[in-house]
Length: 338
Image 1 (cartoon, rainbow, N blue to C red):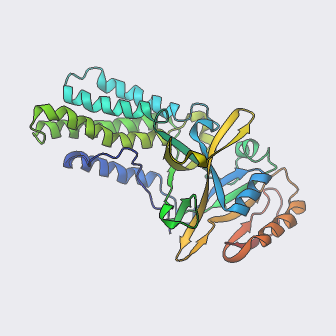
Image 2: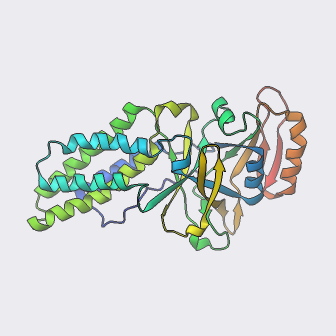
Image 3: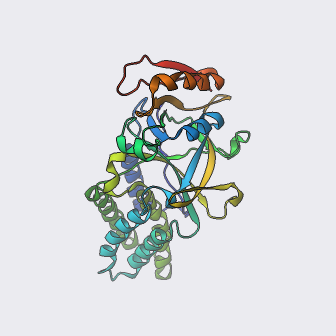
């Protein structure tokens, strides 16, 4: 059962009129295919020994604020790509209704992550053996790679006892190539601007005093798509990471007591701690499938303690595999963890 794509909708506006809605729906269909996990595909989270134990013990994941991720330009990079393209559309536009549409888009992009909304992110890698990942997150090869398999049953929640508060996270595959990013933005804007022009021209909003207002409302609706792109674009320098990310976005003032803080050599990192689980009928299971041991660790020496750790938290349920080391041929060991 594959992961079910969920559109990003931060700005709650009335649905756009027919022609615009059709373009949005067509884009969402293509966009969802890009972020589609293959059947049984795993995504890997590189981490230290201490963090691995906490994840296994608590079934929780730390979603770090986007401003504190490894790319110092996180969100700023995607914002710049989109705004630079948007400027080319605005500069020669004389139509006041279209200018209201563009202004609405520009406000949405500029405001994101500076007012109202806070994006929190949990990072994963497509591969379970990337040297840069071991160096950066796996304690210079002395850590672990946790393989997760997400599906439409996957949920996140602050409280396991209250299913009404649980939700499906956004899962996005990052796009690194600058020309591909620009192509996606331009093709979408070309098609959406054309539909906005036709909507205005056909007199769907015949009152000229209201056309400007409605164009701005359409801009807020369309802005959701551009914000989704913003969160999915990353600088080409990080392409080796092959990153996928789970995204949890809150209002800045949403339960501030649930924001935690940790420090690292670069400063303070705000994060939200969320349960990550698969809901199967009345049972909640942890979607981890594999654990890989870092290449600088003595595999034989660490195998038994890892087995005991998994035994300690085992139950009847799905199976976790301890992966073979990358340079030594040792038989896999399987454990159940619920």
